[in-house]
Length: 136
Image 1 (cartoon, rainbow, N blue to C red):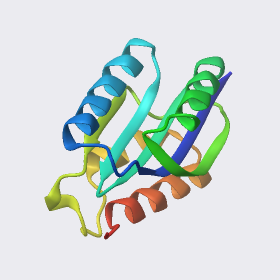
Image 2 (cartoon, rainbow, N blue to C red):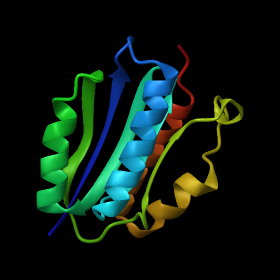
Image 3 (cartoon, rainbow, N blue to C red):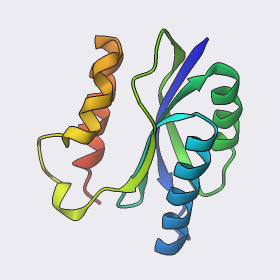
Image 4 (cartoon, rainbow, N blue to C red):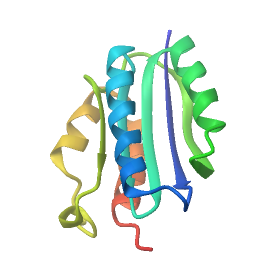
């Protein structure tokens, strides 16, 4: 059984740019090694993440994420079983300044969503649009 979780959260205000970059790099490397797929985005003090994969792995990772002191104010958007995943790998990045406030979503964020159900796809697209357009 496969499972997916999508959430947004606020980064701890004490996190430095260096610590955020280390977190993103570690998350990408670790999740790719463990066959966990998805995306982690950071922008202006906020995180947006989608993780999907084998249910036991995702539930275990989700429990760790929820207890991680590096972020707070977690809002769960999706937490459910899925028929098949949509991501080919795991990617973690900072939203580049040039993509903020752009009404369109970058193709590299949209392409993986084609394989999931339209209702989940709509939720994730809406969250991505809002996340990228967030202003402090």
